[in-house]
Length: 223
Image 1: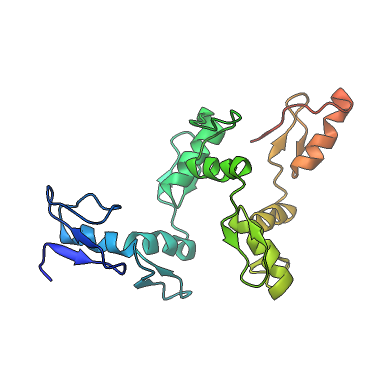
Image 2: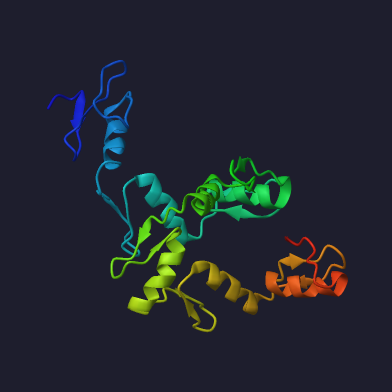
């Protein structure tokens, strides 16, 4: 094969010189062979980069570098408005929108739902489309979100991979563990805008608001 072209697993030919015709509908042309090498991974299941700490494998070196921060604790992306820091820029962007700017640029054309994250909008759209791409390989169950499938799989495996280092509590979902950790830290992220009451759980705050409005629920915000 000539240096100016690569073949991926489907047998399609990708030409990596600008201006040349390419048979790969997903690849309009790159300027370097290195770029093509990264592109080819999109068409294969190859994951050549391995984490020596836990065995995690990635298709791209940059993805592995981001993963390594889960072991090192490195959080290079700093918030300009508070002392928050994040391992990923996308996480910092979400923090900025949720805590400081309130910006929610992604909107659902069906119902007007808005969110700070494009990924969250993609998940939301499945409410309208009915798409359930995550399939159980042991029964006919399918889910719109991977987290829901993971919860379902416990019925088959009993596995609960997320564990609390304080008390040994285990759970299927990382979000459930995050909520559990609050019982140890004493954090109360939900605040009543009427009186300043704070709660560790959004459901507890919803109950509290009835002191002000009866059955009507006030708008509440995590802080």
